[in-house]
Image (tube, rainbow, N blue to C red; front, side, top):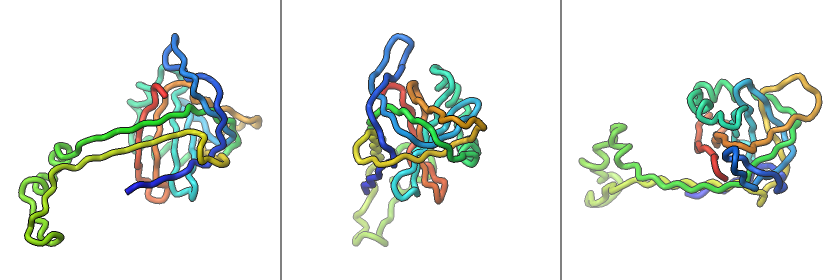
Length: 195
């Protein structure tokens, strides 16, 4: 199954991504949108077309705060933070990036209790002669964030009382996830350290 979604975001290249205090990566994109602040992080929501799925960016306040953020990052804290998101006009800067991952899941699934599917298999209900078996389960994931196929911006986050346009500048390492807004399921989770 292949799903292709476009983020509702107008992006222009500029800026530098700070991966360490001595090295910058010049791959930053910019857009107008809406977001929210939290004391220990900033959160940005970028809805995909159709708005059922959204990408959320969790930016630590400190450039070297990714490890601290990861320690506090769990389903309950994410759900709680996302429930507090409020729309507000912002100026957004994000790096362009692409990630690919491939994982063999047989060992993991067996540890989670699916041992019989690999060892004592009986798929006679879906295959004639019972000749069907599961050899392995491979998960492949790909994500690409850039200016292609994007349109306008809308983002959501925890509101503050300031009236001027705020900035969300993701110029240092951050966490991101893609979430089904209807079910609350997290479909993709990643960390960006080097775009």
